[in-house]
Length: 175
Image (cartoon, rainbow, N blue to C red; front, side):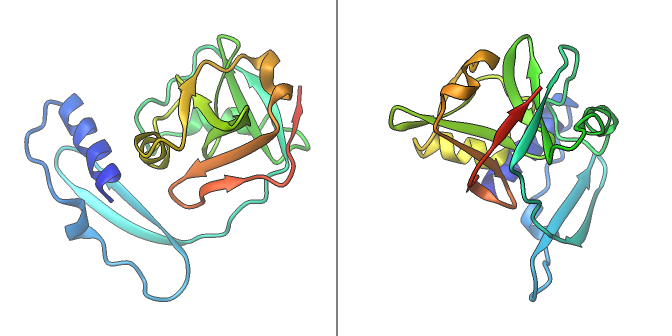
């Protein structure tokens, strides 16, 4: 929760807003089942909704090249990401490549295993809360990951608040 609070405060700071609320005061999750908590906030208001969560199985990622996309602050405005996702063809999700460097999938940060360590892109589209925690814990290191290096990694993991650190059984990269 502390990482979500930090992101919230960072967004408000970028809006020059000083009235920071404690997000935990707004959370009252359902007691049974697995739910995604959606907090929508601006400098004036916080709304909370809960949605039943079903994990997507990912075994193929379509490489999508886009140098203009900016999703540095988590937002309800996902049209650009949705447009890229619609280009996935038969693949389960997309892997967004910006300036020939790996960034993120449409729903998660990503990490790759090589030489005894997990590496995550230094410049993801969104610096997610799970990614931040794993970096702080020393379980991930940041590096530029060039698109041509993708096949050199032995494992792939997706990371976000719902799946935590999900090592994929297999993952194909398609162009």
